[in-house]
Amino acid sequence: MLLEDTRMLSPQPRDVMSEAEVAHFNEAGFVVPKVGLPAQDAAYMRATVERVFADNPGWAGIMRQPHVPIRPGQLEGVVGGEDIFKIAVHPVIIAAARRLIGENLILWGGEIFAKPGGIGMRTPWHQDCYNPAIKAGPGRPFPRSVMLWIAVDDVGLDNGCLRFIPGSGKNGKLNYIQREKSSDLLNFEVDGLTINEEDAVNGVLPSGQYSCHDLFVVHGANANTSGRRRAGLTFHYMAAEDAYDRSFGAAKGSSGDRKPAPLADRPIWLVLGENKNPVNDFVTGHQNLEDLDELAEATRRRLTPLFG
Ligand SMILES: O=C(O)CCC(=O)C(=O)O
Image (cartoon, rainbow, N blue to C red; front, top):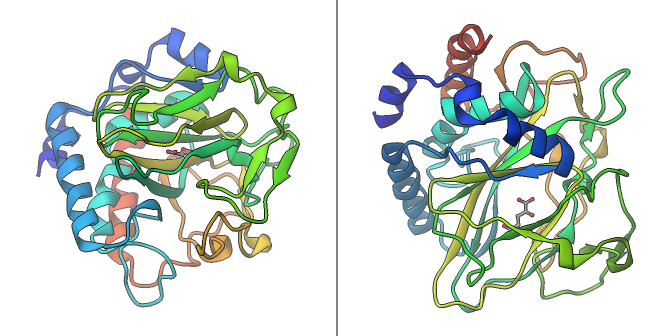
C-alpha cells in the first residue's frame, strides 16, 4: 500500500541523484547517493526483510534471488519473494538505475547479504564481473550494469560496511586468486598486488539508504565482529543494449556448500524502456511468476514515459 502511494508521486531520476553523484559513479565506479528510499517505504523494506528472515531459516550469509518467490519450477528464491519484488521495481530504485546506466533497464538478479553480529563472514575484494552472464552488446566496449546495495540495518565500520576502491575497475577484469577452501563469503579474491586497500572508501549507510556500484569496481567488506546484524538487500540492473547470456549454464561457486548459481535458468525482467538486444530472453525461468511479470510490465509502462 505504501509503495502504491509512492508510485503516485514518482520522482524524476534527477531528483534521486545529483549530477555530481552521477559523475562520481562514472569516474570511481560507485556512489553513495544522499537520497534513499522514502521513510515509509524504508519501513516496508525492513518489515518485509524481517519476515523473509523469519520464514526462511538458515539465512546467514547470502540469500540469492530474494525477489523471486519459491514456487514450482523456480530453482532459487525465498518464501515471501513477491513482497521483495515490489522493492526491486520501486520508482526511486529504478530512477537511480536509470540515472546511472541509461533508459532501457533489465532487472537480472539480487541477493540479501546478511551477516549476524559477531560471526558475519568477510567479503573478499572482488569485482562483480566474475558473473559470466553479463556481456557487452554490439559496439559497446563494456557492459553497463549497476548493483544497488540497500541497507536493511544501519551499516557502519563496526558491523562491516561495504568498501570500495575508487577507479579500480578502469582496466576491466583484474587477476584473481582462487582458494580451494575459505571461511570467507567467496572463495576467490582479487590479487592484492593489483589494488591499494588504503584507498578504500567506506559505504556507511543508515537503513533505507543505498550505495550503487558497477560491474568492475573492486569492493569487499570486513567481517562483522560487532554485536549487531549487518544486512543489505541488493538488486542488479543492466542496460538492455547489453546481453544476458545464458550459454554459461552456472556461475562458479561461492564458499561453503552453496551450489553454483544457475544463471542460465534465472528469470530476468525488462523494467524500463525497451529491450535492445535479441539475446535477452524474458521467458526462461518465469514459471509461475505471472504476478511478478505483470508488476514489472506495469512498472515499465508507467515509468518509461515519466522518466523520458
Ligand atoms: O555485502 C557484502 O558483504 C557483499 C556485497 C557484494 O559483494 C556486492 O554487493 O556485490
